[in-house]
Length: 406
Image (tube, rainbow, N blue to C red; front, side):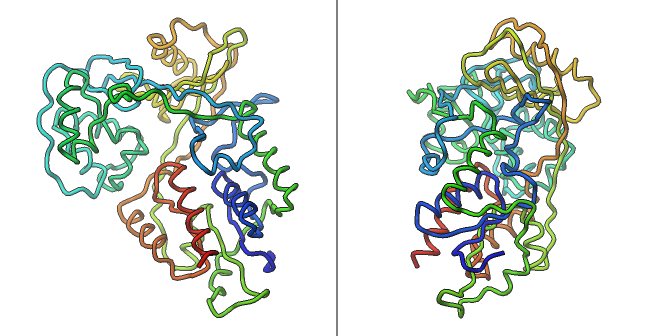
C-alpha cells in the first residue's frame, strides 16, 4: 500500500473504476485495491465455457458526465424500453412503457392514507388497502420482513410508484397538486410527451469490458492491486496534521462497508440480504433488436424480471424450488404479449446469488450519518444507502472534487 499517491480506492467495481478515471482526468494520483481476483464487482457476468450472460439488468447512463470517462468502443447506446407484467390484483396486465406495478382494476382503489414512514411496510400502507395488501404480500415472497426494512427499499423492489391504469387522467392532475401522490403514483413517459431515455451496455459483456478498462488504467499508469485490501485500521492513522509530500492519502471506499464500519466505528450493520436465482438462456437462431426488460409482479409466476438482450435472456426469480424448465416456460408466457411467440431456447443454465441492496431502518439512518459526517477527514465513503448507480457515483465524484479543492 503506497503512501506517495493522493488517493487509495477500495473496490474495483464500476464506482471505484470511475473514481480512478476521474482522478486521472483531474490530475490526482491514485491506486486501486480490490479484494477479489478480478474487477467489475456485481456487474461481472455469469460465465458458461466461452459464453457469457448478464447477471441482471444493469444499464449504464450515456447522459451522465462520468459515462464519458469510460472506453466507448465496446458500448452500444440504445433506446431504454421496458414493460411490466402484473397479476397481483387478480387479472393479468401486460403493459409496455411502465416498469412498476400496474393496477388495472376499474374500481377506484380509494384515497391515500396518512402514515409516518419509517419501514417499507409503512411506505406501502400509504396506498389504499386494495393496493397496499397485495404489494406487501409480494414483498414477503423475497423472505424479508417489510416492517424491518427502510421505506426506501420500495425503489430497489421497483414498487416505488404504482400506475392506476384506468385513472391516469385523475392521477396526472393529483400528482401536480399533492407531493405524496406524486411520489407514490407513476405514469408512462409518453403521458408527459417524453420519448424513451437512452441506455448503454457493453456488447462484449461486462467481464470482458472491465478487462478493457484494466488496459486503459495501465496505459494511464494507474496501479490496480487485485486480491488486495486497504486495512480499515489504516484510516485511524489519517489526520489533518499531516501535510506535504509524506501526507497520508485520502481513501475512497466504494466496496463493502461492513469491515470499514466495524473497524473504524466498532459498529455492526444488520446488512439484510435475500437469495435470488438467475435462469439464463440463449437462442441460436433468434435475434432481438435492442435490449428490453419486463418487471414482473406476480402471484402466479416465480419471476421478478426478464431481461432480453440480442440472442439471450436473464430471468431473475425467487429462490423457489421450481425447475429451470418451468421458469423458462413461465418466462416465455410473460414475453408473449411483448415480443410474440418465441421458440424454446437452445441453451439454459441457472445460478444463485445473494442480493444486498436493502437497508434495515437502523442501517439506513446509521449510513446516512456516517456518509454525511465522517469523523475521518480523509475518508470519502460511497453513499451505500442510496439506490441508483448514478447518484452513488455522482456523490463520490463530488466528494473527491470537494476534498481536493478545499
